[in-house]
Length: 74
Image 1 (cartoon, rainbow, N blue to C red):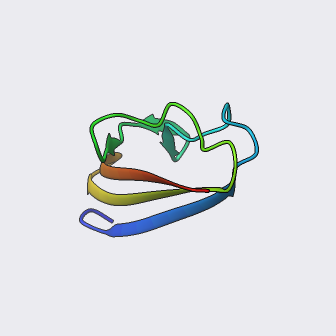
Image 2: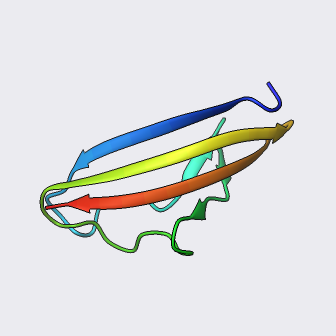
């Protein structure tokens, strides 16, 4: 419903720097993510864990404000 919010956290084991999350789909369509630091990730750690957190706020029908962050643990 409009004005609902949720936080989604994904922890991924990273064994290849080419595999990372830089986008998000909701109900099958791509959504704009506002990334902490200003830009989407361009690589994973390549070892250890990558932790992605998305704060998602539904602002209108099929309209969302999404705040994303990525942290690498080696």
